[in-house]
Length: 491
Image (cartoon, rainbow, N blue to C red; front, top):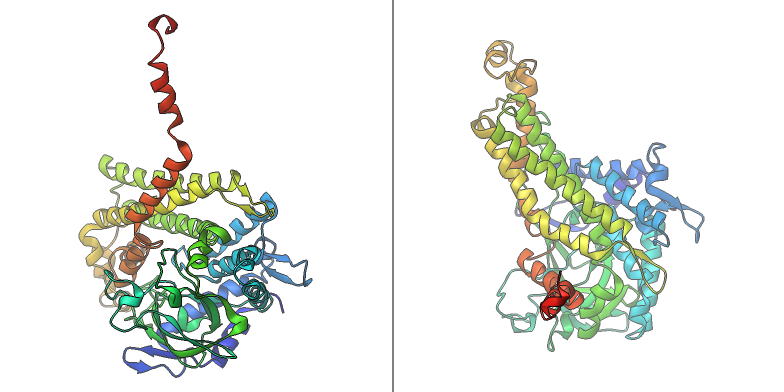
């Protein structure tokens, strides 16, 4: 089939019947559910962009294997131009959602592409795993599927390993093998957009120890597989808010969920790894599934930070406070943060690596630097927005107020901004800002960025240790050697 339209995505979604729980009730019709309806349409718009002449050549390509047009997320980079073709896809999708949807289809499709193109790693453990991941890649590529993933254990007793929890299957693990496949039980999180995806892929971070064998799993199944229960978090909005009052929350709510597996059957041809601690610990570094998706998340994070910065600037401009030096200083800080992330992205793309198999990968150090900076830079952008907006963020009337002819003259008089900025324009700008910096929707976006790649302190420590191993502090050592020379040799 190749690329699919937004309508085809919606039709496939309506044909599925996953077990979704929201607010204590089972959702019977996903498409008609207020919370999901607009996000479904936002994802559908991304699929439709693949057919738009303005974007098609930027975000899709002709597949050599099938002769069909496919999304660039399925492109295995064999040149610098291929790498940039994926970058253009990432930025196009991110700008279409202002960087606010972190789990658009390109993200996990890149993960599977990276796994499949490095399936040689799985051969030494089980050749079937290698075949399975390559076939699965073709399956999602040729059908243009939308995936979620769940790779984190629920926050139970974090002082204990998975096998030490009160219930052996609190965390997702293998119950038994059958002639048809594995039976798995337990839970994983944080499955973003799970209810409105086609399939879920499971894999895990490194860190497995002896005793964790049953939890060392990687597989993929349809989201409506029997026994798979999707338990949604409390919605950040009810799906009924007006676009005027909530221009972002009304459109870009990304539902997160815990996935509870109740003796779910996973066919053998959908198993990519199990019962092997060594393989599980090596999956990330050997397949590039940290590095290649980090390119997508870096671009998406850049767009999101740039958007927040623009909104903060609009707030300041609308009320004329950007003439004050302290405000200019804060906004200048945000602009420099955006430029820092943009520069790091370009460095990662132009100082690429080439694997022994000829796969081009963005340089890892700049991408990891982005991962270390964004958890500080984005919260700072939100803080600046809150400081500049001050009490005005709390005092916006509603769209219904503006429609009231009796009330409208007062609104036009008391809510106007600097000269040339009408009351309605200023209120719209402040509502845009409030969705980002004050509403539950915006706080979720903030928390999401803080912990997007896990514990930022631990990630920075890992980054330092890798730096220490590679650098050997050569310049410092040379300086120390120079000081041991006789004074007559020094100028």
